[in-house]
Amino acid sequence: MPVGGRLALRSPIDIIAGMPYIVGEPPDPGIVVLAAKGAGVHAAFCGALDGSHRHLTPAERARPPVDLAVAEGCGGLLVVAYGPPGLVTPYVDALLLAARERGVAIIDALRVTDGRYWSYTCVSPSCCPPGGTVVDIDSSPVPAGAVLRGIAPARPLRVALADLDRVRGLLTPVRGEARAAMDALAEEVDRRAREMPETTLVRRGFGAVREAIEAERDGDGIRGYEEIAWLGVHLAHLRIRDRAWAAITERTALLHRDLWARVARHLPARRRAAPAALTAVAAWQHGDDALAMAAVETALAADPGYSMAVLMGRALAWGLPVERWRGSAPEQGPWE
Image (cartoon, rainbow, N blue to C red; front, side, top):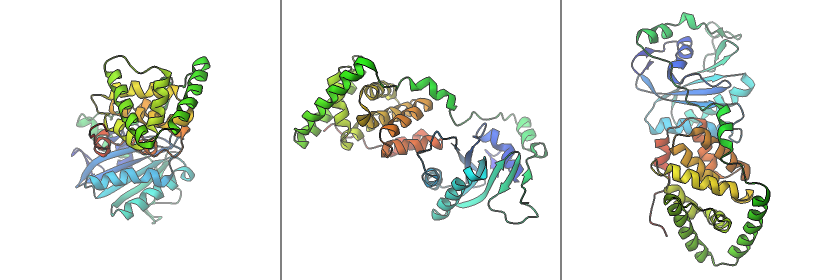
């Protein structure tokens, strides 16, 4: 299988040796999925299994790369799992099942553990011994071929987990007197919202979100506790939240990142999922995967089943391209 028409992967050893030139350093423990189109690798997805995405089941993590491979017209998948069998095998099994259900062929599925590899698709002990096969990178022509062709190792697809600490501060909830004042006001705003007719509340919500975005754009920003408390109420309505989501573009991503991160920090936990999820989308649109991952964590800590955060978590877990997310976002219609 040629990679970019330049490197040929003809054996399991070649595949493992070629990983640095396709995805950079593969995650360990983790899984790499290569989607083949024609005779070459069309797309690559990396998913770490270190616990940072523990809210996703194996089946949930299997669907995004398979769905994207189908959408891109790829006919086959090559799976390479790194780590102990008890950890990685459920994810490999889920990928194989998802591929079969979508009619995508499995070229091979390998596990690399402690310097040896095993194939999930080979049952012959003559070529796939029960004790595994030593990963002898020096026996593969791929690294030398890469040097001859001037191909450098790829930049890793994943953000280092240590980078999460850099950005968590942007989402740390306010404390002390500010926390007490914000929580009390949020309770009062919730009570007043319950007394409003639904149509009035929704109409007011569209206006409040629009004004908050405009204020951020003009450099004023929304910082009043009551305004933030009302935004928390309004974003609980999916129509209003989706309108805010649709307004996030590559050009406006920084504006939305700052606005919704500030709102998430101030709101009580019960209202934090929506603005944190919006922060994740904005950060990803801006190319800041570390902040996006931290924002997903914040949203799911507030609401473990929050669908927008789950979707965002899947995309980040597999390194899906942001262009695909832009295509799936709600259409940006007029403010209602």
